[in-house]
Length: 457
Picture (spheres, rainbow, N blue to C red):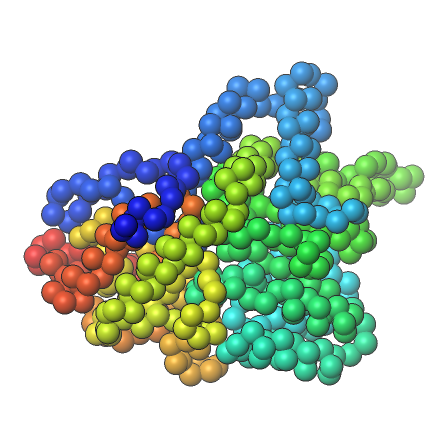
């Protein structure tokens, strides 16, 4: 039996039948292998949203039927997300724009004087929000094993001052896809009185996330990585710091009452609970899309989805291991458990050039660069600690090196529940051909991107 027949069918996603042009002028079916940036929408999610769209109305603001219907749908979506995350009694779900928004919201609610701990391996969304007045941040060096990560956190917390403490950790790396020992790290953090926020942006689309079982205090994730478009995210967990903080945004919905004072000032009483940090008109379609995706993944069964993805990961890593010029990036060593995210470099190739050739000559979409995780990628590629990246090496863009020159950027291939086996087969074939035969077209740098130079072909 072939590997392809051993792996069950993917979930239905939008774009599965999209064709894209190649440099040659031909068209091929697009192989979307950039799920870690934004996953395609599940067809189930799109259909649910389309069915609701004619009934769209204002939320928490209208007496009419559509407004009441939309309000009920919005609050039911909150309950669905709470069930999906297995929240504890008293935990709350706040709808945000994305993981970045969620973690910045929490950073604004952290009490003054809090000491925050994070490994330098974090995505910028969970590395940078804590750099604000009133907080002290300690960045821990990249560990090379789960045991080293646990020991490093314990050592750091042993030397921490009295007062509130917060530890921020990713569930799965957006660079290597490797799983972090969240439960063990949380146990250590709680032993020393520190709270824990889990960045589940890359974890939630691939593995079941249980707040109750892991023990984390908060979890953050994005809808657009969970097969749900429309720009919504989630911050879920303990309510005390959130209820004690100033609202994330000041405005309607966050305020319970607003009154004019005799001296001409305005007195405000703020809501407690999720409404406190959801000022303005809620993104009801975004929230409903997330809830629909949660239901779809639950119904598909995470055990089956995880088993399928393990088979795809094995297929990919075994295929890349057979190409001597390819080096897969690992933090915890070969064979470490990971979700469907793999980054690598190719000897003799600039990663931007290689990725451009995958797109222009094979219709395969991957990502190249530093993946909004500059310290981690530079560590994995042997960059000098403390070295500032080149001006062009910003989040989402590679360095402006010429094809063939060595640079500190990598190629990332990522996939999930909607990825057919054929896409990985085509990807591995393309990598082998580019390594052995080179690109068929010439490429040039244009605005920080490597593009086909049709005039030189």
